[in-house]
Structures are given as structure tokens and as C-alpha cells.
Length: 137
Image (cartoon, rainbow, N blue to C red):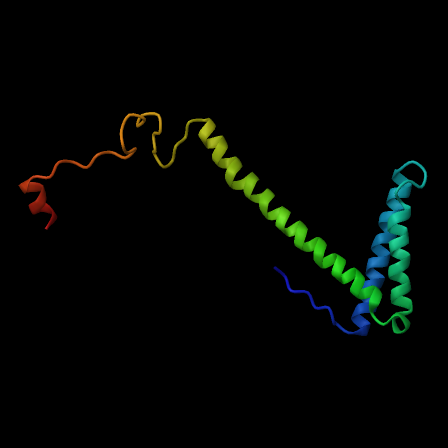
């Protein structure tokens, strides 16, 4: 997992808060334009105002706004990366294997149906005799 630096410095914190405020303002404007009336556009707008306030009054709020957003982003990233890993597995490995099995492709040649009465699904070893033993040694 990616390590997050919670102390990048004042200028970097202000820059990140300004980028966050601008991005959330764009999301809010898109929601307001797309959705009926104000709808859910007020939520990202309110968070954008909080981020902008943290960027402007950085010395007065003493990094509290930055740390709030940094911790939220860290937790969201941890949850999304966990979910993305599982979805990628399900689509790539399990999905591909299920499609192959549905079309009867058994790449490991396990033949489960043919071996129901036997103790092992693998072919039995050939009987050893003196000639085969001499060839091996």
C-alpha cells in the first residue's frame, strides 16, 4: 500500500487544499448543471468551501483542515484499493476460469467425471519390470 506523508510542509499543504477545493467546486458545478435544481450539489460545494478556508487561513487553523482531508483520503484509498483488488481478481482470474470451464476446457486435465469410481483422478503408474528399471538407472 502507498505510504502517505502527513507532514509535507505548509506550502505543499496549501497547494493540495487549493487543488481539492477547485476539484470539488468543479464536481459541484457539474452536479448542479446535470441534476435537477441544487440536489446533491451542495455537499461537494460545502466541502470545497472548507478546503478553501483551510488553504487561505492555513496559519490560523494549524493544519487541522489538511489533516482532516488527508486522513479521509487515506481511509478512502485503503477501502477502494482493497475493493479494486478483489474485483480485479473476480473478473480476471475467476471469470476467465469459469468461462473456460463452461466451454469444457480443462487445461490441467483433471477429468473429474471420469474418475468418480477411482481413488485417484490421475492415471495409474505403469507396472515396473526389470527392463523398465534398467532403463531408469
